[in-house]
Length: 383
Image (cartoon, rainbow, N blue to C red; front, side):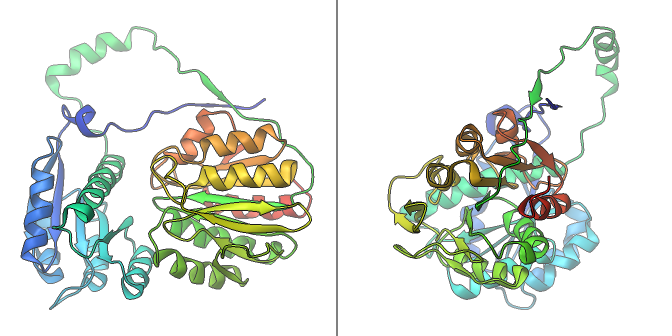
């Protein structure tokens, strides 16, 4: 049985308080938004606001001087919008993480997904009134979580200070405690009858690569996707998936029969469940409470697909924060199905796939560029 070393996630929040603060630039044409977001970030002990700007042009001119680790970039601004500024920021400050923000509208969703193809690490959907209590708290929590996860991963490890070199040298003479290896499951060579995919942070980019590769191979089975996204965004994502795969793709509709050759995307704000019978599977949408703080949740899709398709399920867990999908992947593997996980090096955040690996549910861990060819071979009956 194969083994992999288990790697821990980067520290966040209070755990990172002893580390050098992450440097943040805020770019938004609303003075109110800059004030509110700046207040949230300045209140965090591990974050530092190094610049705020009202349009993309000022951000581009200043980014090399301010040297932010993360830029929170509004997409719709006067003089120079975020989509125009994005590649210029990345050109002048290579390695900077750009987190784009847009409205919860179809236009906002489309621009956000376009920004991801131009180098943005992730997106945020701004509520209609950030200053409102109900919309502000979830947005704040998501903003802080993404800044920490993306910023810590992108920042290179700090050099060892001279005052600590002696201690490091002494520690190097002591045998390190090896981390326990992570066991990979044996591969089940049985036929694949359903493909289920879970993703979150960095997911749209990964899904585009995956579906471009597997599109020709999925004509004989259904594909179901849960990507952590708000309403409207998932509808646009499905359109992008359809173009990448060359197959019909849309948000799942309650009661809809699940047919081969189609891709079903869980709509934002609702869980997508596989229901019906093995002979007539159908989509069921529920408003049940969030699972792993998510709705839709990957675990919900994976558990239900495993219950119906049993050993015929192939699960794929792509880049994302948190641990959603680990329990469902374990369920798939326990029923005789197979699970692939994206590797750490090509994940924007190795939270979800890392949790699957840690749970011992994956039979293989691969870079995103190798997952598509692997899935294609499996769907053709070859490992």
